[in-house]
Image (cartoon, rainbow, N blue to C red; front, side):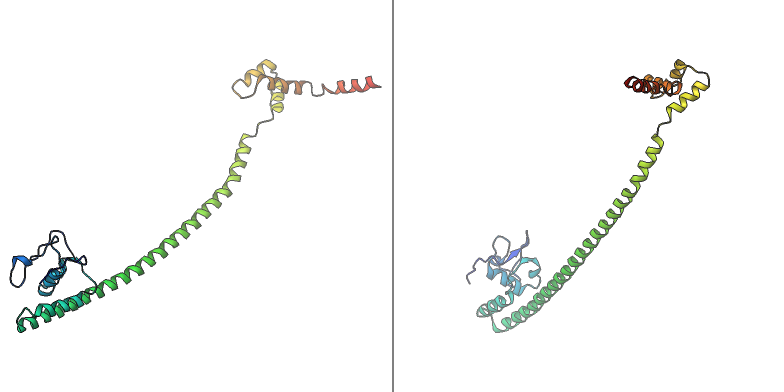
Length: 213
């Protein structure tokens, strides 16, 4: 029987399957000498062989049936019937595994859909929370500005200077009183003049009017 190399089969790395019937060295199967006849031989006659394959063709059952028909010509009739029954059992096992895989794939698809819905819901919740947080910050800002303006509103320097003058302090003494403040000497002196000469500009305006007449 001529073995033809075929790419539809793949064994796990390091696998070595011995001949389950005649223990022939020529029928040892490894990842390096994969042929379709050898693969079908081991799958048909070794009930555990299929678990060592990581890839088999989708029409494996049909190929097994054809293989057993060819192989039966080289075996006694009794042995052929036994091997056919083994092939039927393996066929049912393959169908069962395929059904389980299809069911797992369906569950995986459903799970992915639920995860997608969950992700969208979480994104919507985060968007709502971010929007609410932004509105709270917008409402707080005017209050903070109002407080800052109230705190930073400067005192009436003219009134303070007048109080110092009423207390008997001269300009130099008043400047010393403001030494640790942010008021400049010019501002203090200007306020002092406002208090001491509140209508100093009025005569000048009157003089201008009188001169024009």
